[in-house]
Amino acid sequence: MNTEKLLIEIDKSFPFVKKPQGLELSFHKDDCPHCYYLRNDMEKYSEQIPKDGLRWLHNELSCLSSKGLLWVLPSLLRYCVQANDTYDGLETEFLIYHLSPDLKYQKDAIKQLSLFSKEQVGCLKMFLDWCKNHEHWSEYCCEEISRAIMFLEGVNA
Ligand SMILES: [Zn+2]
Image (tube, rainbow, N blue to C red; front, side, top):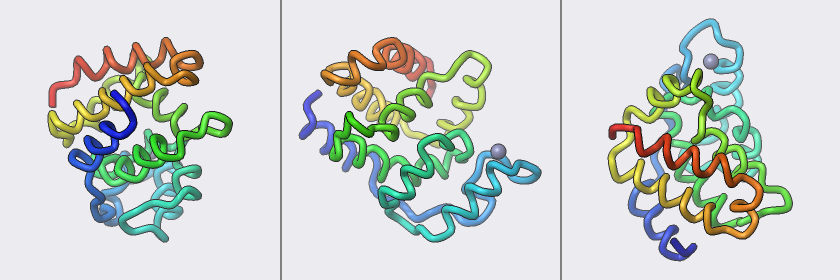
């Protein structure tokens, strides 16, 4: 999967969408301070999320609902692939981690992917394939990339 092809697939599978409103954005609805902060801090964004927002989100992806993740991924995937930053690449690193959840988080991760189409799950696998062939990420996150691909194989979309 080369970069150019992957970007075409991302354009097809993850067009920009409107931000889900209010409680629809977060994984938990009430009584979760993390999800509350997520809803507040994302208030200023609508369709596309700039670098600042993606940096804020990098470690908070589990706070997103399925709709919320479908809103974030169009910006996040394009950023990871286009910026291709290996020196300060937290967004890519944490997206790989997020897609390779430990057993105890897999149920939530599957729920988070519940609104994804087959095509969208396929596109995430292509992204991981790109990471697997990337000179930095293949070295740095080798095990997590393989685990993520296996995890997505098991997701019924
Ligand atoms: Zn929460």
